[in-house]
Length: 126
Length: 486
Image (cartoon, rainbow over all chains, first blue to last red):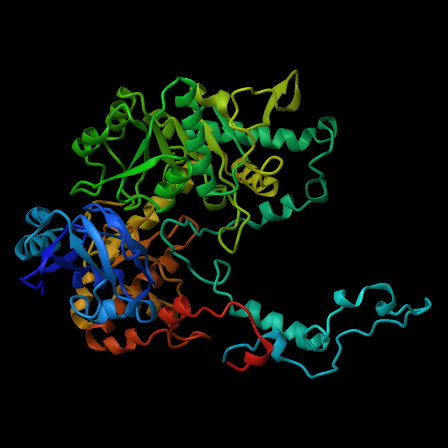
């Protein structure tokens, strides 16, 4: 199920924004497609990034995939737990499996992202 | 039962051979070498008898799962039988003891083989000139892209990108990046082939090349290839052909005639060299004459009935491999082409396509065929309908091992969900294909009735299901004495 309260990219990232800080992860559909995740390369805290820039890498037993930031801004925190337990992404993609937090520099970019309905259509119709 | 490592066999002090006593006056190593160069304890070598060694390695060889023992329908890899005679002839002393620095006049036979092989490959592919140097497919890709780069730069145009469909082999975008280009991916059309409008949308003056496999990785022939070539050339870009799937085309259709400007061959797939196990392979790159000046040196040329290594090529991209490439693989390819002849090669491709269509046709009702067209030499099924039973393509693949078949390629191409990519090749009998089909149908039934059986498979192999996550996260790459038991 695709959570209704998040915004999505066509590259299968989600973002949840609270008080100007966005939490980013990959969708349940993405983790299912990737299979068991074995390694995560996280961005440096403090790094300024632009919307849809490749900022992290998720590696599974099947493939390595770039993770793009849905919005521009500054990375303020990364999920250190993933270094030892990358499988958190498989187990709880919308919760404990979050990847990084970003301070939005252009909050208006959120409007350009997909809604839950639009994302659900993307993954069911391909 | 799994076989122990050679280090875990034997007993302390046991020896395989007794070395005669040294008749020379004994020299103490401590007197010759500085103390800091000496090891503090003896090296940890296996201490085993000769028969233990023989049995250990014989048993290991029997555990091999290979083309010589089993059907191996690994899609995109063309794991066909390679005739032994090619191996035997390539190991003749006249070939195997050659030195690469021998003067040209003493190695005319070897040069002739390379020269004629190049001619044959150009004829099969529809090209004007060739280099035999690259040592495998991806190396051929890089060489081909560097030739394209040299061509554009010589014309004074610096182009920056290469367009690749999303069904491409993963090596394609990697080779582009290595060659200094940006790989631009275009989504395939609903029919699994290149989407002409999307291609047109990306083609511009910055495009150095369009990189295509034909038949593509879905095993489908790009029917609009002539239009694709025309569009590509209309912006001054070149068309690169990934020749990985040449086994479908020989003697029937030539990439050069389709409009490709550059093509790499995989001699270790189609032309009688064993594939896998670390090589060596060979990935010759053939080109149209506009690109000939840029070929790696030396180029083998014929003048007045003599063969020469021509280094006088001022526009050459330079060498891409030590000496002249993997010579023994070239000999096998030469022998194979001479043995088969033009008619024989055509029959190879016809039978490769026939085998694939037979297998896919028999399986497509039970497994899905997402791009439902008759495939060429390989076809891509999907295992997605078994997900409702908790069974993934991976489980189906592992279960096939219990039936004595190597699994097909899985989860590739990426555009097919739960992909199962089957390439039977032309060297298998109908009985083998039927046995494989029967196993696949049985597994489909098991998936519904007893999914646990699949999820725990394989049950009969020396090693059972491996923990892939643990293997990726905590790989044990080397045996250590103190951890030997783990």
